[in-house]
Image 1 (cartoon, rainbow, N blue to C red):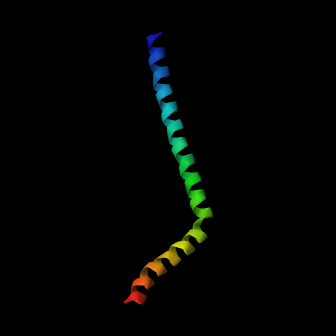
Image 2 (cartoon, rainbow, N blue to C red):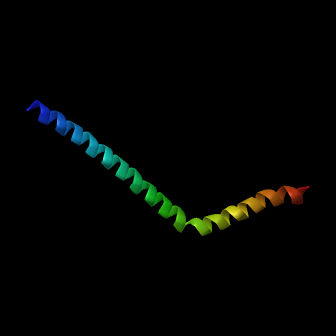
Image 3 (tube, helix red, strand yellow):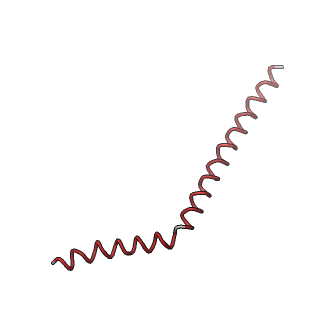
Length: 61
């Protein structure tokens, strides 16, 4: 009976490890999906912000 308990404990640990990794993969996919959907507007805003940061000191001097 003790051998069965040890095997179940090992199986439970493996299942928990797999579940944890699956959650990380799901979160990563959601994050990448969100980044891709906001990619072009974010790029344009970043480009405009960079141009402002570069051009303002040039115009002031």
